[in-house]
Length: 223
Image 1 (cartoon, rainbow, N blue to C red):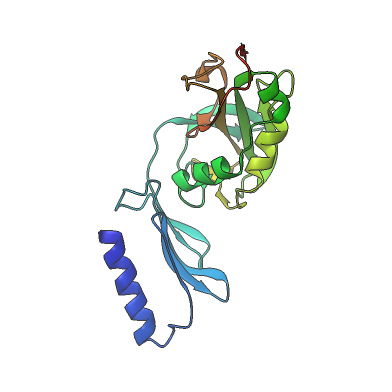
Image 2 (cartoon, rainbow, N blue to C red):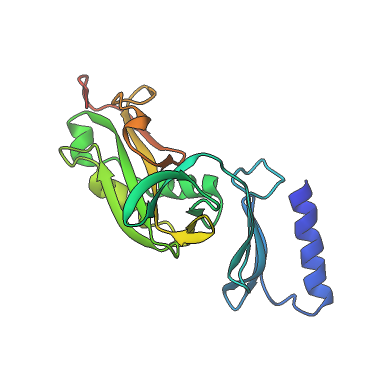
């Protein structure tokens, strides 16, 4: 309800100021203003569609974070040429809704035909490396020894807009890495089909992506 009231107030303000021809971007995940197709002013992003409290507020005119929901967990960052786990003064994250990020990936994710025909399931991990400015500098897929899922994972992630906020450690911008788990499941859904412990991979794990399809044959191989 609060988000709906905020949207109505902002829209009326635009109309009164004579800017009603500019578009106002509003969804369950974000509120803000477009001008000539670009985001302008202050945008609010909600990591859950059910939340009335913004998790990220970004000022596009100033190019800076106004507010970010704090996270006291450790992140994998680069300090003095070494990758180390540290609590950061600003965590790296997607410049948008985290729930919408997962939804965007899920909508474009396809179960590879070869894996489905061979009844191959598994949990793989996409490592996203960001430079100090928050620009993606590397993508790598782990736990896919036979390369059943790597291509599908990378294709789905390329549909995500390249808009990220870089990490800060002790006030300084630093490179960072994030992990996105992908579960490929055939038939009845099970938690963690490969049995791989998330702690095996260092770094902050974002919410995972799951694709579940109907089986073609009776025997399924797990790895």
